[in-house]
Image (cartoon, rainbow, N blue to C red; front, side):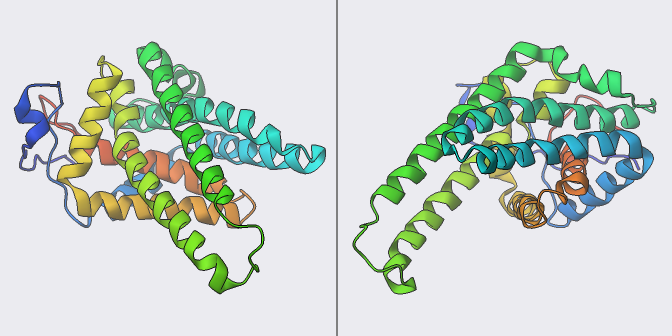
Length: 264
């Protein structure tokens, strides 16, 4: 299916000259469903690689939960999450590499996909550290919100409601910020020799100019993660590769290139 070029919008970031930003294209509201469809096609074409990365995405959160349950030491959550935030981009890069190889008409391989982060290693690891810092910040904010809850109040819905509303609002804001920062940063870093600031600002720019389609895509990702947790992480085996492949096709649709791309 050949990629068609859509109108390239501009905004204050691209016109200001204060930062380098790769231009983006205008997305349609129905594009997120198309990305899932193309992601599913990639899964069907690469069942072995898909299973490998899916199992990896499922094992890591399961190990975190198991360590906490086995030791009863909840302090293990923090270092475990830090490790996950550093490994997560590595696994995502592997999935993007699989879709990219299919786009180029090559046969994807595990060895090639595992080497994906080496193309822009410094900035890729910098992105992982950025995610780690943001996650630690969120954990501290969540702890602060919990500390604000008076211990003497009854644990009824009415007494908990103000804190539930506050926690939900802050969590929604943090999730929205994460969507802006992470939507396209990883595939940009993997494919293009650009610095982390350029990749992050390009992602922010693209999401800002395509708010509705990207909010829909963000809701799909959130739903996939929620289903994964509800199913005891088993759902991650299927859902995380689907989201990973779909994210690559979102990147293809959203970020401008000097010449047309083709994906069969």
